Image 1 (cartoon, rainbow, N blue to C red):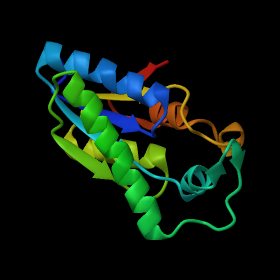
Image 2 (image 1 turned 135 degrees about the vertical axis):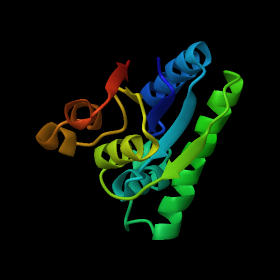
Image 3 (image 1 turned 60 degrees about the horizontal axis):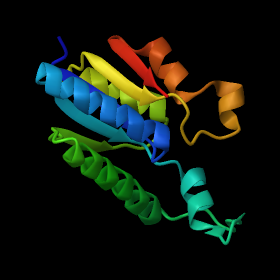
Image 4 (image 1 turned 180 degrees about the horizontal axis):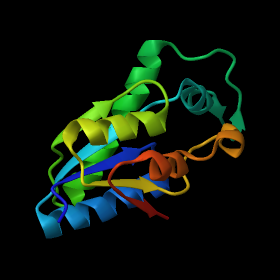
Amino acid sequence: MFQRIVVGLDGSEASENALRVACDLAQKYGSDVHLVHTPQPQTVAFALGAVAGYHAATTMPSAEDVRTAGEKILNAGRSVAESCNQAIAETHLETGDPADSIISCAKACGADLIVTGRRGLGSLGALVQGSTTQRVNHKAECACLSVI
């Protein structure tokens, strides 16, 4: 039923849950799993500035800091998949809008399913623009699964 599954990761518990569900489906259907992460400088700045419960980022992170943080998220995703006995076909570290990156990856690899967490690390901007998951569900050309 599903030959290729794309999973959007952001480092949140919801995205980890989404990956676990995707791994379960992949094992059932013999699917390839692709991981997509699009690090956002604001989220990286927030994480880098976290000290003893206070969040103070004085400057935006460098492109290298953002890339390094993105690789950590993808490596954590690989570890989760490994714990589920699921191989990852490809990982994709993108720039730009997360929803657009997930949809582009799904199109490029011919995905049958996109799996995302419903409550991720979105910011106040999600109130104005809508969440990444909502945008993916609206714009995708394949089946979508939102996981809590």
